Amino acid sequence: MYCKNCGQPLDDKSVFCTHCGTKKDVKKMDKRNNELFYSRLKENFNFSQETVVMSLKITGVALGIMVFLSLIISIGYFYLVKSYGFFTPKFKIFDVYNIFNLSLFNKMELIHYSSQTIRILILLLIPILSIFIGYKLFYRKSELISRSLLCIFNGTMISLLNIILAVFITDPRGSYLTFFNFANTLILLTLLSYLTSLLIDKDGKAVLDTYILKIIKPIVIVSSIFVFIVISYSVFYLKDFINLTFILGLIVLLPNILVYVFLFFFGSGIAIEELRMHIIGLRIGSELYGSFAFLTVFLYLAIILLVFNEYYKMYQKNKDGYSYKAIKSICTIALGNLLLSFYSRQVFEYMRIVNNNDRMYIGVSPINAFLITLLFLSVISFFVYLLKDHSIPRVIQTTLGDFKLIFYIIITIIIMLSVWFGFNTIDATIKYLFGI
Image 1 (cartoon, rainbow, N blue to C red):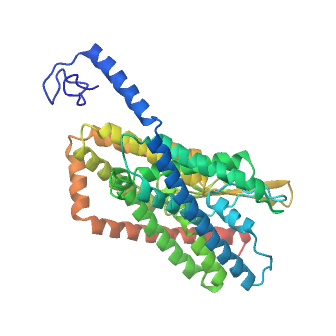
Image 2 (image 1 turned 180 degrees about the vertical axis):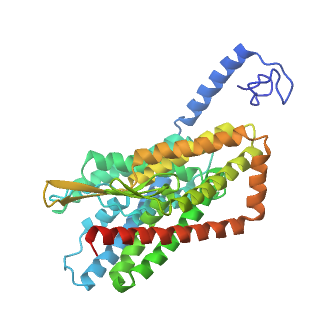
Image 3 (image 1 turned 60 degrees about the vertical axis):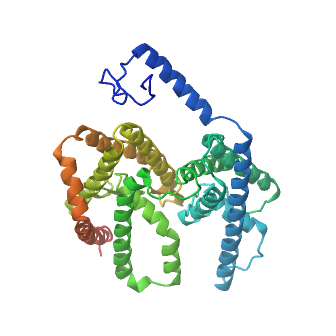
């Protein structure tokens, strides 16, 4: 509710406005709030010439950069494959178009392998970088610009152009002329446009210290530490098998690994068919190996404290608008995790020895990632609001502020021990299964 006199937000429990002292009129306030809500909704989807012009500029630049990067990557991949003598095909425009679509993670309908879905997250940098540059150059926040329509226009124009190109650019290896191609491109580019618009201020400058980024920042840091330690241990563990193919494969799959670990710390288990890694340990089939579970629980508690501290900082800076910002951050991050989990999930079909063909999934369930993120952040933000007047949040804030470096060093040690126990568990399991 908002004050009828000054228009400031009203506390539901108070009788008078805390800003100007005017007494609340519930009936008039409800009517005014409804009118204000619908007027803001109308403004958000207000069609204007400025919105269309800005959309054309952003789309043109983003599309040009996407095509250029796809061309560079396709040429580099072509000559890399050719130099190793795998095959010597002629370079075609379909190769560029293929990279362009793979960067958008549209499923390629191959003739004999339609069930295979291989998504390489490093290619997602193509649309992300392209859209960011387009918004950085031309996006300016204004009352005449509808951000929602702008994002929808951007996604729609590139999606339509992609379908039109699919009519003329064909290849025996497959086709992108499908409804899934259009819908997938539309949803992805619209969401990327919206998320990018949140990072640009009214003057067109990139804002990397928004409250949403601050919430996920500690999880990104811990995920990066975890991945670095795991890769270092893997290189040592597999030192006899290291070659150029291994190194290139590691570089290409590095973003996928980062995303899996990032979602893992939200509570989403990583699955490779029957092998599942949860926050409490490693599970193969119905067996639970929890020898290193206590370390993972400590690590998870550390992440909860870091996220709790960021939400408490948000509350301190904006007490009146905390609920709105908390809900917005929760929904945005949950939607982002849904997107990441969907575009990083691999599906392979393989032949079983006894039964029929079966499928193997690698990654995180999108629905689980979305729901668990909602639950995880909602609980933490609720406890921040519940304990806002208690001394516990202030103690956590002071401790993390004064000993942040030591805190991250402790987290690093816990990760190292956890990974060491984890690799030993996997090694023991393999020896047990194969009788080595």
